[in-house]
Amino acid sequence: MTIHLQKIAIPLLLVLIALMQFHISYAKEQAQPKLIKLRTIHLPYIASTPLLIAEEEGYFTEQGLQVEFIKMTEGVKGLPALIKGDLDVIPDTIYPSYLNAIARGANIKIVADRGYLSSTGCTYSAFMARRALVEQGRLNNISQMKGLRFASVQASSIAAYSFDKMLSKEGLPTVDVETVYIQMPARLDALERGSLDVAFCTEPWVTRVLQAGHAVIWKPIHHITPNFQLAFLMYGPTLLEKNPDAGRRFMIAYLKGVRQYNQGKTKRNLEIMAKHTGLDQELLQKCCWQAFRNDGRINADSILDFQSWALKKGFLDKVVPPDQFWDPSFIEYANKVLGESKK
Image 1: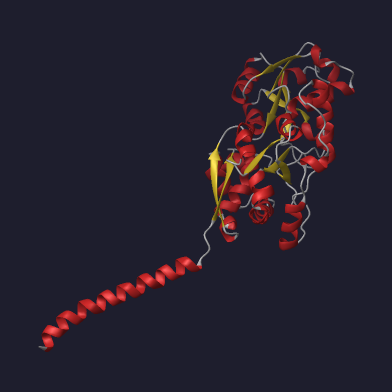
Image 2: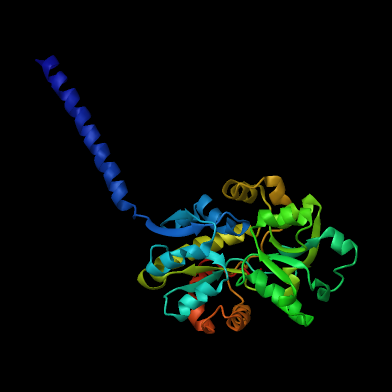
């Protein structure tokens, strides 16, 4: 009889233990708040590193966020999704499209710095010229650009804006220079073949072009437009209106990523950057890394100047004032939490 009872009791005991373990596990799950899911864009560039650091180091998770990175080659392609709320954050370079959307009533705003042209920094972006032209003295001054062939990104880009700024200082009209719009790999090839005279390049292509040996840095962009607000982080209606608390938490994680990035070419930073850009660590060591402000603040005046240029060129409907394109409340909150750290 005793043996029979033991045969029954042991399985029952195991069932009870399993139930207790289930309830303990379930209670833990219920006690842990669910992560808020957000969507942003992943651009495979050096400037994306602070966001990727925040992901890899668990800074987003610390803030109760689960961030999905959508791979794109151009951030501006995600603008319609940001306006509709299908995307929550866009990291990108300044383009008139964003400002036009704001002027037309879109609930989107710049909320943080994502890279600027430091007046004292290394050369992250530059106009690069064929070595032969420079060595022959055919580009000793900007007026000698007349009749030459220049390659840029697109007509409404920071490259075109800087190029116009450079030419206007010498009174040289843009029409005196033949401008073509080709992708970066093609620019390198054209410089090597001599079918191109000057090209806008940004890292890692500045370093790659220098390594190829057929071109040199002619005019660093940060000498032409010092401290220009090259890029930004932009929020859509989800974080501006529906869930600003998630926006504040995202900003804390992001600025932690920025501050780690600004520690420089550490082993960990290089690992993360190489993993997500596909670039060799040796190349990344040689590259200039884009400048970021630790506190996330932007140079709003430079965006106003860019708008004046874009308006004259017909790329912009009207100038958008800073209080319509810039919301500093998220970085102000994050800096209070993290402590002010300017750089």
